[in-house]
Amino acid sequence: MTEVVVFGAGGHGQVVADAARCAGWTVLGFLDDQRPQGDDTLLGPVLGGRGWCRGHREVAIALGIGSNAVRQQIAEELLLMGVSLATVVHPSAVVSRAAQLGPGVAVLALAVVNAGARVERGAIVNSAAVVEHDVVVGSFAHVSPNATLAGAARLGDLSQLGAGACALPGVSIGPRCIVGAGAVVTRDVPANSVCMGVPARITRQTER
Image 1 (cartoon, rainbow, N blue to C red):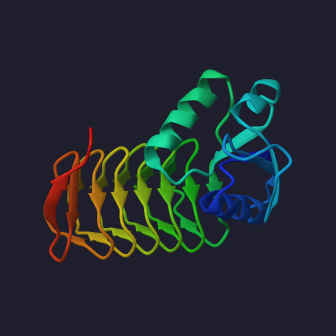
Image 2 (spheres, rainbow, N blue to C red; image 1 turned 30 degrees about the vertical axis):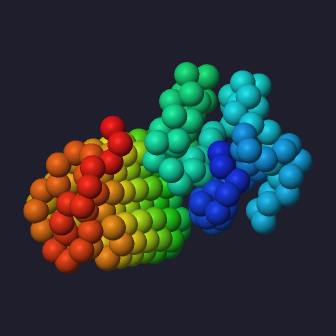
């Protein structure tokens, strides 16, 4: 497929659309349940909501939704419709041939994904983020801009490593966690935790 539609017409969706265009995709427009059909964005028109996909299964869909949970919900609905999820890699990103990217992944400008890393379905590796060797980024997780997962670290499903945060080598961050901006994670973080600081400390639990 060479044509793509981006689901989500907000700021993150615009960034994904720009990355797709730079990577050689033809971006037809956006889908967004919260904006009217025909509404113009910086990079193209809103074509409709999720129902648009039922009549256009031949077009791949890129996930342009920042919220991990909403991105998962939309992706699962699209897959049930028989829609293909596009994996978008900005041409300035460096992705090892020995890395694995799942469907619906977005790897944005200046990001690095090194050898042996695995970025699972629907995850985001945002601008200038670093996913080092043998790292696993879980499904619908988000490595925020300038964040770093050092060698063999783990970021669980639906978790977010905040802007500029770092997880040290071998550290495991469980599912549905939030790591605050600039934090340094030096030890394993259990599921459903919010942590912040240097070194990162758990401050509360997320909703399950």
